[in-house]
Length: 509
Image (cartoon, rainbow, N blue to C red; front, side, top):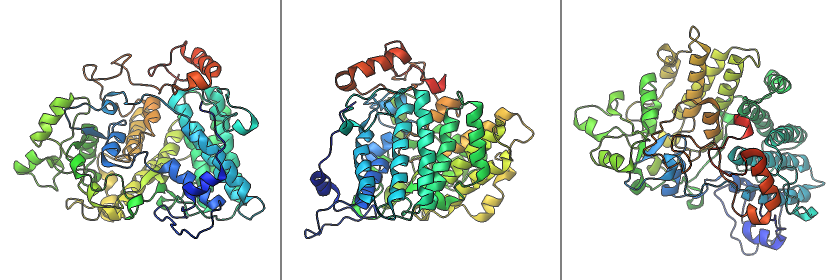
């Protein structure tokens, strides 16, 4: 792990003194005092954590490939579409922010907001650790961010211990937020500690479910207790999301991306499922296939849409695209500067997490109600999405449509098998992430195997075994130099000494 350097306050001041509590505003007053506040550190750290990693249309397109929502229709194959990556490594860069979080808390000492910033620091540390362990396996956590204490080569904690520590930190963060006051510098929830409390509880549910293959009876009891206490996200107003704006510094990454949009198709997996469900999100996600429009279909016809097989060879996809055979992503994505918010965790996902847990017997309740509430929440989200106002091909979602959504194929399979019902839950959960620019829920696919992602060994770019889905990323290469003893122990203990992408971490065994 890179040594976590002590960032000089003067450098921090120059980097973020212009930040204010809104993502899209920057203070450029040369007469402003060059001081650092906890609010400034909160703004910068949240922006670093949740803004898309490289905000341009080409990279945003790549970021959508991993979970098979879209396909690139160019002759040069993109590794992200074919189970590899331009950079097949995880990283510990987020841990470098732990020093900033420590300063954030220190600068809030003695104020009425101290407890709130304590909660934010713990939540973000837990988020960093959760993401890192899902990416790689065993990772530093208990000793992360302690370079100032002389720990420059932190040990790698076992993945089971990382999960446990993340859960404890989320629980502690909720307690801090409960004792806190609404605070400044928050670009996600506007400093609303009630929303942060709900998110901390909801995220514990997600962590527990992600480790479902290894969950203990005690942890299932903890899951049930959180649900029963019901201090959880209540509706879409609690969605954890990053809102874009018309400001050039904070516009949607795909805005003005027409030169890339014409090579980005909606996947066959998405299109076929939305057509099967008669789900009008299809008209929000996609454009009709040109050859079907030429053949007489209307843009408001479900049958005017055709998805791109993500496993097909790149040159074949490109040729078919030239012939107008695929539905490209909706033009609204490049037309609206503010665009769709980036959804990081939603009320709908919380509903699907609980629905699955009920089906598995972890907690009492009506899975059908949670399933339907989750679906309705996403449909209502799109119904009220201003960036979609003019891009729905005459098939806008309205309340009457939502009220009748479960009359057809989307009806909960009460009389079917448990597997049938879980498939419905998992499919709807997967659809939440369409064109969100991230692969954050790929571990849920690895955990459940559903929906089944297309894989063709003749096009797969997985270097170790073209018949397998990658299970993890490699450790960053600099660990072999900066933390060699702990790095070697981690790969020896987990993966027989080989740092490979197809080797299975603890939580998936």
